[in-house]
Image: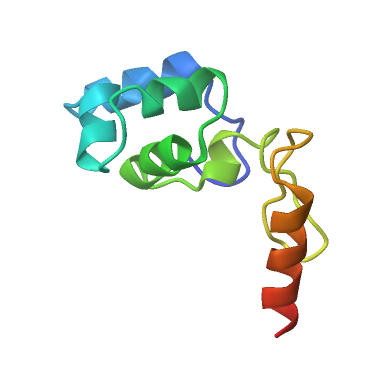
Length: 99
């Protein structure tokens, strides 16, 4: 899949993982995550689970889930869930970037 193709739906992602000989649970455990992390990533969003799936498939998380990773003006992923990061965490991140 290239960056310009239509994103894979959750069923296609699971099918590709199974085609490559593993499961979501095995993938999560290999990434030192809870066994359900990759399952949660498909339905609700779980950043670490999303990253584990993307790394395994060799595709960026933003390509697999473009609605969860809208492009910001700086080209970095932006969280889409309201309140996903506390205001203090956002300020701390901004201070680190400025330093």
